Amino acid sequence: MFWKKGGWLIPALLVWILLYHFLQSSADYLTVKVFGLELNSHLGGAISFFLYDSPKVLMLLALVVLGVTFVQTFVSPERTRDILARRAGAWGNLLASLLGIITPFCSCSAVPLFIGFVRVGVPLGATFSFLVSAPMVNEVALFMLLGLFGWKIAGIYALTGVSIAFISGWVLGKLKMERHLESWVLEMPFNAQAASDFRMSLPERLEASVQGVKEIVGKVWPYILAGIAVGAFIHGYVPESLMARFMGKGAWWSVPLSVLIGVPLYSNAAGVMPIVQALLGKGAALGTVLAFMMAVIGLSLPETIILRKVLKPTLIAVFIGVVATGILVVGYLFNFIL
Image (cartoon, rainbow, N blue to C red; front, side, top):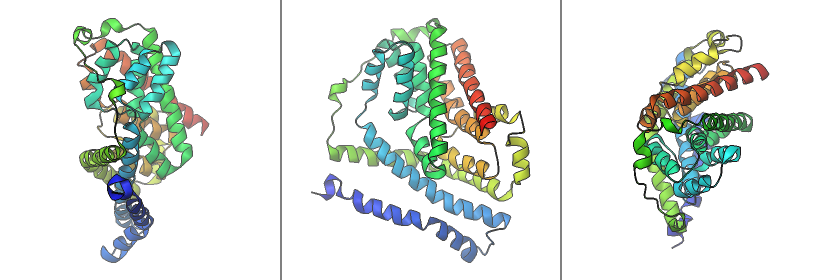
């Protein structure tokens, strides 16, 4: 009975901690003893990076998703929608930006969430604040940044991401662009589950958390390994002088270039994290790297295509322009300050 009620979680966490502790030494051993490479060589450095980061990122992702999914079982999208519908003005934008951090959101759910928010009277500006914050400042990104780089970078990313979401939604709300919604959005019926019906027992919440790990890690692991492979190549072969030239503080074009490169890429926080780690390790400027990460996660091309189903081209263009401008400002600001 104890095991079924969640007792398995204690030994599982102990095994996780033990494995995580020996990741670096295991990667170095395999690189030197099995592959016969020197750690300070280009290929050895790249192989060691890949062997260390692959299990590390996947393990961190699994732990974060397990915890976040458990928390999210207490917060339904319908409850979030109802809360936002009661707020207007700047307070609504701020609340939407903060709620976006803890609420389940992905590209595939953008259309029904957008329709639901608009149908129950959530201001359009607050809706956009939520849509920017949820993918860009999501829990996985924050916890993985905390685990990989510490509280300072994680805090900077959270603060700037929420600021971009708040300001973008506020600006779009002031522009009064409701007429640029597709007409069927307001006409389509929306059947919502009442928030009071969102009840689960502890075993059900743990089961949902494990299922979340299976689904998310099962879907994104190829992208994670691809991202780690790119990061390993950068770590092992790209000279620091070259990285400083193109993505350092002295290159004024580095921030807009990183945004232009990031927008068409399709990745999630876990997939882009190894690339971010390698770029920072090679001397790329923090603001430039943050701008790249935000563009990849917050302005992905697939999400834009999905949103085209509910937004007219004019509103799509304004949305992308406002968010991209915020990302550029953040990139230049932190390159200047830090």
